Amino acid sequence: MALRLPLDKDALMRIPGCGKRKYEEYGESFLNIIRRFCEESPDEAIASKQSLPASETPAKKEHGADNSAVETLKLLRQGKSIEVIAHERNFSPDTIIGHIGRLVKWGHEFSPDMFFSAERFAQIREWFRNVNDGDIASVVFMSRGRLGYGEAKLASFFIEKGNDEAE
Image (cartoon, rainbow, N blue to C red; front, side, top):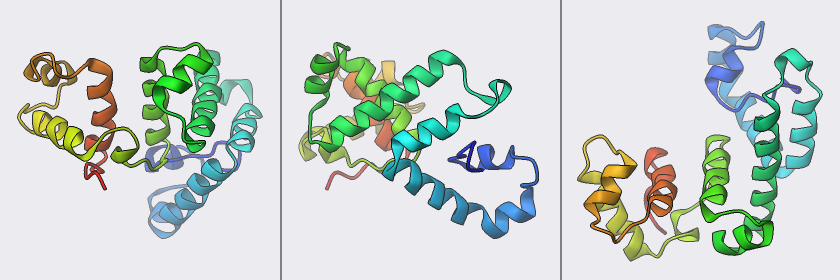
């Protein structure tokens, strides 16, 4: 587990020796500890995953994205905006939004109010509620030009995780 750092049930269950019984007894406890470790020590977490045998490591491109997402996390923790991070790193804002999506998937907690005013997020949430399948392109279309794809994608991370209440 220390080398693979599983962050969800599926990843944990793919580790030899971790079956349904062990997951039910210990799984969530282990996942919480691993998630905390990855959040508190992102550089060590990346190094740990890089020490896996070649057959078990993610593709090289994915590793680069992992390192890049960790750098984005550091800058977000410094209070920098998506636009500032994109400018400093010579990326598009959509790339930074992609990093945030990966971080959310890894279990990092962000609040919508880090990125949206309460009023703006409420409007976006309403557009999502009015689209049955939650398709981002449909939400953008429904907004009639008032919402860009990147902003809709960012909001979707919170809405999909059920963390869709701005504080």
